[in-house]
Amino acid sequence: MSKKIAIVGAGPGGLTSAMILAARGFDVTVFEAKDRVGGRNAELRLGEFRFDTGPTFLMLNFILREMFEEAGRNVDDYLSFTRLDPLYRLVFDDRDFRPSGDPAKMRAEIARAFPGQEKGLDGFLAAEKVRFEKLFPCIQKDYSTFGSLFSAPLLKAAPYLDIGRSVFGVLGKYFGEDKLKLAFTFQAKYLGMSPWDCPGFFTMLSYIEHAYGIYHVRGGLNSISAAMAKAAVENGAKIRLSSPVKRIITEGGAARGVELAGGGVFRCDEVVVNADFGHAATTLFDRGVLSKYSPEKMQSRDFSCSTFMLYLGVDRVYPDLPHHTIAFAADYRRNVEDIFHRKSLSKDVSIYVQNASPTDPTLAPPGKSTIYILVPVPNLDGGADWAAERPRLRELALRLAEERAGFRGLREHIQAERVITPADWRDEFGVYKGATFNLSHKLGQMLYLRPRNKFEEVANCWLVGGGTHPGSGLPTIYESARITSNLLCREHGVAFREPTFLGAKKEVSA
Image (cartoon, rainbow, N blue to C red):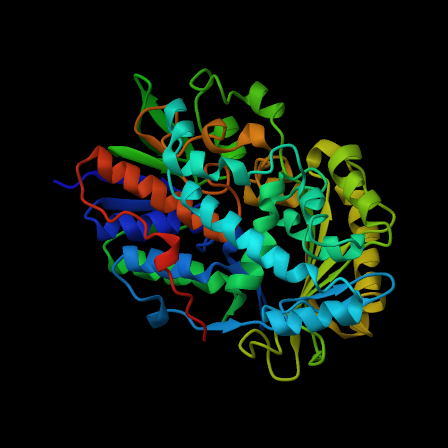
């Protein structure tokens, strides 16, 4: 008889695990609190307009391709991809910069916007390529034991970690102008961290964008979640929507099943937790079960920033503006320090705007657009009154989108609107402290020091998602699911294929 597995949450990690484990013969049931799959990667619909709830950047497309292959499926049978160029548009107070994944175009663009700095690009691409190739094997293995910190891949990668240096500091090796450094360091926000605090080796995030591209998925990145759910069900998994889990049943220090909020108990051999880790640790286990990650100790952990979100359905299009635009606050560093150190709301903020409709006509009716605006803000430790701050920040975000990001007349064309605040992330989406990027990625919360894929506090309990190794972001969440699935298979003597060496991978663009 195949082992029964309960997966708590149908986010990217839970769905990846479901389709892989079902393909390998496990009896898989996924319990999702919402009425749709995806979690923070779900579809958000406002009448005739379709949005991604969370992630809008797809990087390392080959990892997604491999996850479908692990499940015995071809991703091209489910999804259609568009590689974006320019990668995005960056708006500073005195210039506009459009990075490209084509080195020749990128060199010319640097020469135009930052004359004399273009010579640093070749050094950046060469050095960060080596760093990425050394570090990539480290994110594909688990760190369940202290000895794993002395594994061959990690020891080989150690000289490339730039211990003691920040992402912004590392960029000084390649470029002299601060604003150009920011163009290669704002990606620290993907981890919910400041580029002045984020460990230096994460400089490879910007390299990944240039070397492997940024993609849009037709229908939005939420289409990935729908495709994974379809593949999982085709492989025999069961997905129960509108079925929130009240608690994880533990007996004798081991997970034995889940109790549903609506009543009923599901007994199983293993439990895979894809719920937000902070939320799971503080609400899904009986009092006293967890020690290392007790509610009191979770309070003192370091968490990422949050995001203030605007989803707008508008009755016009912006064909001349790129898919992704980031407009920096005039004093970007002060804005970042407000978010991460002072935990306060800045008077001037940075915004990200997605203008996906020119790339993808399926998101809105002809002549209309979906406009997605994200404002990085402090998590709920900041103590802001979001009921009071919501209208002020909405107005500020709309004004900046119009005046700084170039979306002229935006407010006059709004037909549908949804706002999500950090309090909403906590209350509606079960995100601990509203920290949308989960536990921060400081060195003391990574590898062996991050909650482990084979959860160290409860037997028969496994973690996937941004709160475990290797961390937040879609590609790393997918890898967390593969690591956990492989560990679980090893536990039960089920054969699996080890991940492919990076040098053997080929990026496929459409």
